Amino acid sequence: MHWTEYFGYIGAFLSAVTFMPQVWLAWKTKSVGDLSLGMLSIVFISVVVWLVYAFALGLLPVIIANSIVGVLAIILLYFKFTFPKK
Image (cartoon, rainbow, N blue to C red):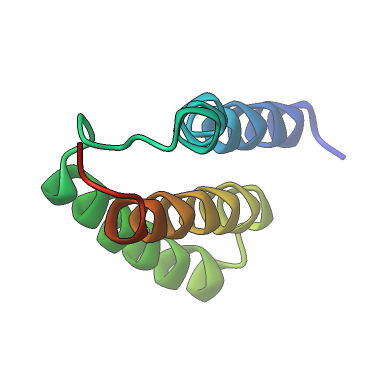
């Protein structure tokens, strides 16, 4: 593996974990009132676009990162619609 691929995987890992603290906090507090539905929608749409691009070019780090971010965005969207409004 070329050294640049290591940077790709490190970047993928860091991108993937960016939403994990937010998902954990939302789960723990059962509160997502401060999260913007518009932001979550844009994140999800951008993940879909990145995945199309990454699959077309066979970019595994981008596929991994965006798949994880996509799942986390879906979880936050689910929370947004199911947690009671305060």
